[in-house]
Length: 168
Image (cartoon, rainbow, N blue to C red; front, side, top):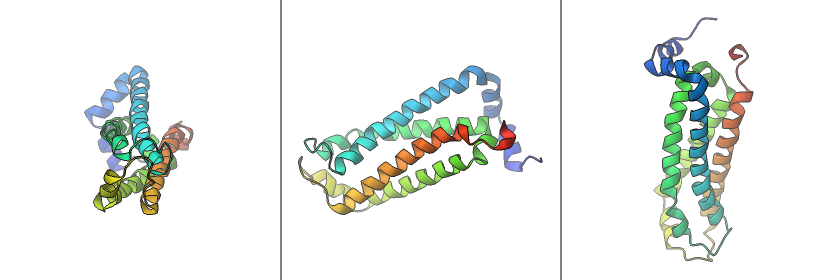
């Protein structure tokens, strides 16, 4: 099988060489850190989404929203780690349908974030007192968000189970 030019480039980088050289201990360490980042994303954004859908009505949505920067930090942390994973084993990821689906979920989640912050939805949420349910359109936005992030988590877990046959 001939190697694709993009893959040849990635395999020629110092990052690929670094990952390959230190893989026995580096890979488990990075995966553990990736789980911490995922916990930050789901633990903050997921909780906010659940609250906006009507759970824990005693907690004000603006108070929950103050945790979102931690989730954003976890997201960018995981993006950096994801680049390291991809450069370490580009064939494991690029040809993997679980990885592609994960990227699709991340893309939909990104568009959903733009919809939430780019419309009046966020301004409405900031004004809501505790015990008040957000309007239906906000509930739909946060339900899509929660579904996408759970999908990202599931697909990320499935990547190792659906490696391309030539990877094994």
